[in-house]
Amino acid sequence: MMKKRKSMHLVQKILCPLLLLSVAACGQQSAPANNSAQPAPAAETPAPAQETKQLKIGVVQIVEHPALDAARDGFISQLAKNGFEEGKQVVYDKQSAQGNMDTAIQIAQKFNSDKVDMILAIATPTAQAAAQTTSDIPILFTAVTDPVEAGLVKSMEKPEGNVTGTSDMNPVEEQLKLVKELKPEAKTVGIIYSSGEVNSKVQVDAAKAVSDKLGLAIHEAAVTSPTEVKQAAESMVGKVDAFYVPTDNLVVSSISAVLGVAESQKIPVIAGEENSVKSGAIATYGIDYTKLGEQTADMAAKILKGEAKPADMPVETQADMKLVINKKAAEKMGVTIPQAMLDRAGEVFEQ
Image (cartoon, rainbow, N blue to C red; front, side, top):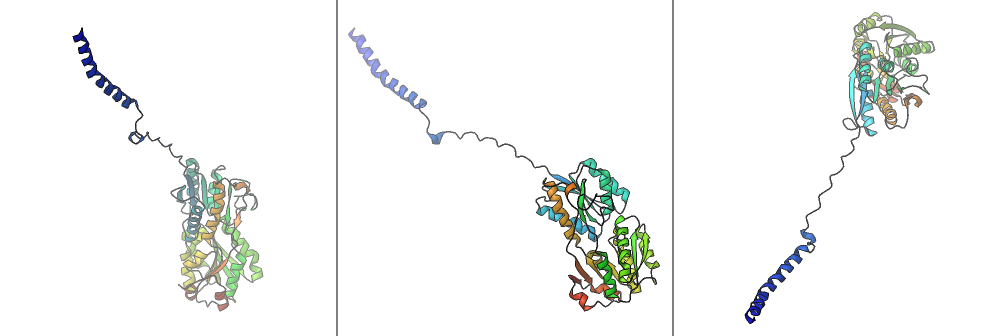
């Protein structure tokens, strides 16, 4: 019995330390782990960013020439300043009808089927094509002389439809006064215009309305294609003392033909807009097409932001007019520009 108790006592001596170690080890495993040793919690997957819809604007101009190009570029630049930058918030589908009304209609129909968010129509024929194609898509026009006569709006103050924009109506009387200032003895002014452009006929009628007051007779020639422009100019040689080129897209795109005749025959040319003066006409008193495009963009931004609707936005005109002179052109046409005229010019080109 004594041996058995001694053996049990020996086993307890051996086992107890082992059991204590085991309990301690178990206690360590169940104790909270040190924070620094804790694995980092799984990062939450960020919610996908909401993609802003990229707006699409269809741009159509009846033909490419400096004035219309300037209006287009001014629009795009100013719209970016309003928060609609090309390639980011907005993309453009830029098209030219190349002077063809059927092509203009086809382009407008494509814009309609593509469901563009807005159409910028540059010049009267393309604005008419767009307006005939859709009554839902907002249409902003620019470089349109008389939008009421063209059937684009009900009135300048309240368009009442999906179309509005900016007019480039010229100060025709002030422009024709330049003829008498450059050539006081002038009696007759020749005007070449496209029979297919409503805006051109409006300007011819405006010239006729003030011609008697200015002591001038108007000699007109209507053309239907660019190839007829030079022939029309040549037919007026010996009959007119000066040429007046209105903001007619067909004639302006072929103005070199008029200038060639004018320079060879020493007949001064007065233009309806600044870019024609840069191209070689002597002078104009008129608008800046880049600024006209910018003005149109400010209107467009209000529509795109939901702040206004075309139906309620009056058609705008440009208030700031300036006299622009081309001295080199005057030399080529045998004209001496009076100093008083040079002194009040907003811009003078030397070549």
